[in-house]
Length: 222
Image (tube, rainbow, N blue to C red; front, side, top):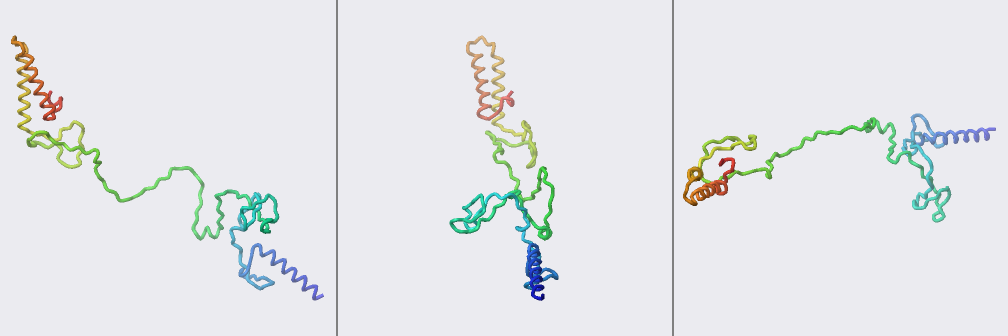
């Protein structure tokens, strides 16, 4: 009777230990020990055992991944038992236990489409665009009487005068052109052959001198 009771007790202990092994393994669960080995039990936190398994895709040799089969069995080359390969619910799915999510401070949120903006503060240097820099240089000697743009960085509009310049050479060319215009107008009806044409030629030459030699624009000459 005692022998039968010992066998039943051992069988019950093995059943309880086997049932609890799926959730607990030694050593070390709080206040609970294995009745066979006396080791303390601890919870199994292996994420791999907690991941959901989907449909079996094929069977594969764990030591020879290139060998696959659609049926369970053995690899005839190595004799290893084929292991099932399950279909993953999502190739990018990552399973993280609740305890680890709390440890790393992981936060979750709804997936939504919205513009992402970020302010970046970096050191920089403001420089002038050299391709848009224009240096003004006159073709005649003279002196500046008035400066309209009197500080660096002032906004200048197109056509706005930058300065007032006086040049004796430019004034002499201007007087030459004005006298040629007056002579052409006075002698335009002269009865002497060739006189009107020669005076017109002198006026044109004086104008070309102002435009090409001194760089005057037609608007400034008119």
